[in-house]
Length: 194
Image 1 (cartoon, rainbow, N blue to C red):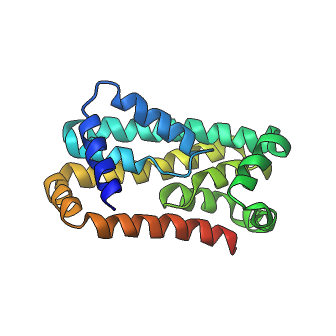
Image 2: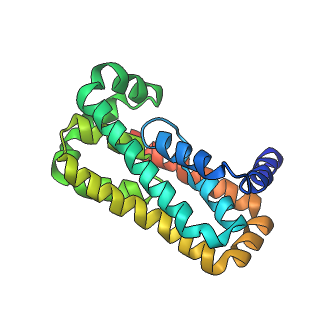
C-alpha cells in the first residue's frame, strides 16, 4: 500500500504538469480497448488538484474513451481473429467471450450502457460490440452517454466536495485502494463466470 500511496502522491504532483491532459486522453483512449486500469485513477487526482478544470477533464476522458471504444469496436468487427483474440486471450476470457454472445444479442445496448458507467472492463464490451455487429452509431451514442455520465458524475462530485473527498482519500487511502482493487478484480471475475 505504501507504493500505491507514493504513486497517488506522484499523480497529484504530476497533475499540475501542462501535458497532464494529454496523458489523461491517452490513458482514457487505450483503456477502452487495451489497458486494464481505468482512467479514473488519473482523472480524480487531476480534478482534486484543479477543480476549476473538472468539466474539461471529464470531457477529455469521455471523448478519448469513446474514440478508443470505436477502435475496440473495429478490432472486434474487422480484426477479431488476429488482434481481438490476442486481447481476449491475454485476459483469459476466451470461453466467456463465446458464451457472452447470447447475452449480447438480447441486451447489447444495455450491456454497453452498464459497462460504460461501471468499473466493468470497457474493452471487453467494445470488442464484443464489433464482433457481434452492434449498430455502430447506436454504440457510439450509448458509449458517449455511459462514459459521459460516469466521468461527469466524478467531476461533479469532486468539484462540489473536492476538499472533503481529498481528506477522505488521504485518511482512508488503504481502504479505498483495497476497495478499488476488489471492484476491478470483481469485474473480471464477473466476466469469467457469466
